[in-house]
Image (cartoon, rainbow, N blue to C red):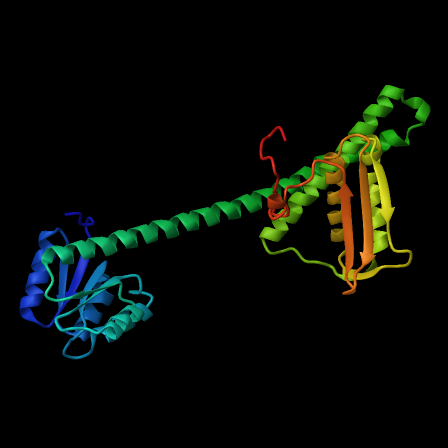
Length: 331
């Protein structure tokens, strides 16, 4: 027999022969046994001793086993105890359903073989153990996820300090007379400046992720002209596109395009889209940015490129956090 080590079973039955047989069988299987013959006694023993399993007869002299089960499941001290209902009389399907709804785990009809009772107790204990392990694993994963979010937030803040110093140094180099730098040094300075901008962008993304996962992310919405937002995003992306020899085409409404939104986040969205278009388009490719007001008064913005594209099945996942089609380090 597979009996859980040190498990305690409370056997509740007002029939002496049934009480003796069930208790004897389970004790022989290795369980510590407690007994009760009334519903009130069963509640008192359960609250005092907190057994792992209760084998509970539904017909008791002072109250029904259904009521005992319901009261045990309503109390936080005993709600996790597994309960096996037993009955010496024929029980209808509705009675079984009532017992299960009250919180019972299993229903046994007497007379049952002692081996069946032992196997049933073993089974509910295994299920409880699996449930506890699953809850413990979920708690550990939640704690690890919380620590990861805290680490991302701390990392983003710590990275800002050296980035600020590097950015100031690059700006000071840019203020020097152009004749004071050689062509090679000027190129190196431009590379550093671009990479600092890129790193600052990544750090901002890390901060955004940490705010989102901790529920501290808020949109600052207001009326704004989407044409202006798009122009700012294009200005940020244009140097990268020119460097890669890409052709940029624009198709915007002639007049103001008023929307309700967060200017900073919208610029971030469009800049990210343009960065990806530039990153995954071949040299000499075409990137087209268009916007128009649809019939439902919503503004539709499209960024189209001549790069590698996305398969239809990938489009469902690409906007998930940190989603990338190729997860390898050489992507």
